[in-house]
Image 1 (cartoon, rainbow, N blue to C red):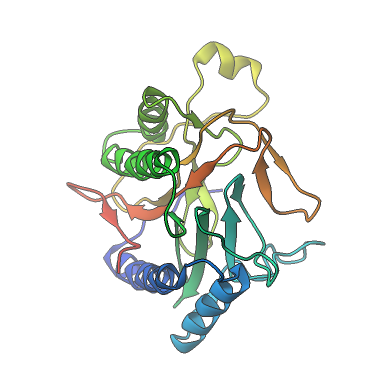
Image 2 (image 1 turned 180 degrees about the vertical axis):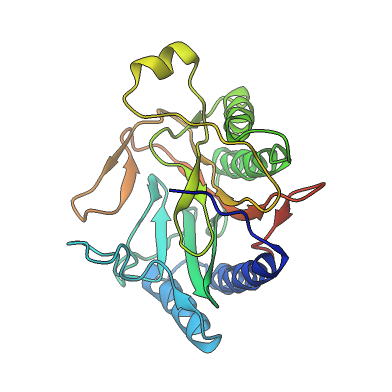
Amino acid sequence: MAIHLKNAAELNTMREAGRLVAHALEAMKAAIKPGVSTWDLDQIAARFFEKHKARPAFLGYPPHSPHPFPAVITACINEELVHGIPSRNRILQEGDLISIDTACHYQGFVGDAAFTVGVGKITPEAQRLLDVTNQALLVGIEASKQGSQTSDVAKAIQAYVESQGYSVIREYTGHGVGRAMHEEPTIPNWWPEKSLRRRMKKEWRSVPLKRGLTYAIEPMVSIGSPETQELDDHWTVVMKDGGLCAHCEHTIAIADDEPLILTLP
């Protein structure tokens, strides 16, 4: 798939889509407390997007799939990494970590962002995981400069996370964002050595960062092993060892100087 570099008008529209996602995430974050269900949070996002004439990007995705995603957000608790399905039966408890991801289509473009926060009082171990994950996102954004490569972003995130004693998830990555939710290029959170890349079946392509390139950076960090597994619901991804994990995300654009974060309020 070809990479489309966005012009100023397109970036302005993407900024509006990103702003809507950011406000939806803020509304959900404000509602997070013990006793709230993940379905309650999904309904907050659904109502927000409907009010602002934005179309949820996750709901029914991918089209024509035998198992399209059934909700507006993904909601993951503790050892759940990504793609958790909201439910009236998933009730937040004091001390949980919850990760919320959502995206919307607005005037032909997509905004996509995520956060992980604690529910009430959390352990120092959990707080440090959140701090490292959020900092990894900033590290990835700072590495996203014109003239660099997508591999530079991946290497920066991996080096920081592993220097803190945590693992980066291998199977799931950031991605290009534009008129579609998933576009080129792929933005991994790690970059294997050349000898390992030769032995892997997956093609590893590093793309130059040019003005107008837009993509989502989403570090996924675990306390223990980076190995994951998908549950029988065909969506929810959990850590194999049952350890805590966290995930955060911004959509950004490459600009002349500093990268532009498109998913801020």
